[in-house]
Amino acid sequence: MSHDTLGRTVVAFMDASEESQNLITDFAEKLMNPTPEWVRESKHFLRKEPCWVSYGVVATPMLNLLEFFKTREGLGVSWEFKEQILAPALAMGGDLLATVGTPFDLPKDMDEGEIRKELGENHVFEDARSFCLYLASALGRQWDGKDGDFLTNGSANTFYVCGLNGEVFVVDAYWSTDDSGWSVLVYYLDTIRWDAGDRAFPCSS
Image 1 (spheres, rainbow, N blue to C red):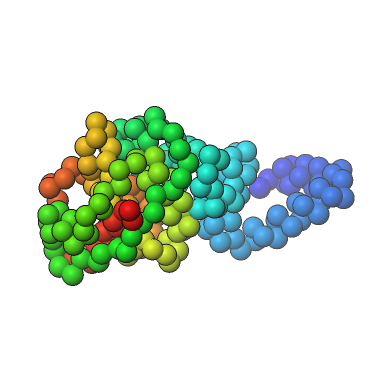
Image 2 (cartoon, rainbow, N blue to C red):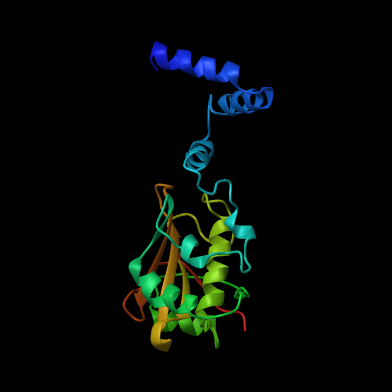
């Protein structure tokens, strides 16, 4: 910072109201040795974007699925997910979250047929909208790689979801091994053999 910039900053600070001075001082102290979370959310604040939002608590009409499932810092969303799962979800009504059954942790490398047999009948999420609401809520609760139902060690968290034209797809949400955030991908059935340690979630009917 140049001397001129510092001088203008000091003058502006002295001319500010006492309330504003207290806010500026508090903000500056918090940014002296900031956590990555403080840096990220401060940037959102200065750009007049939503900040310090816990998406996990917003699970009703207030949750904007189109806004949530945008590729941004902390979240990568594939175009296949947007086209095959999110698009049909946005065309549907309702604001109930899908309910999830007991997850199945793969004891060995397995194909789709083997996994789906273990998940049992009615494991498919038939309502794309309720699934997307659930997924957004779950990702919000574990936004920074926090512990929760989803694995955060780089392994897959998979779901069988009825999407575009009634076709069933595999949705995979996984936390990056470099801790950069979540990725949400979609695969056609029977195109991947899943690894031991991956986790599959059934719909709870």
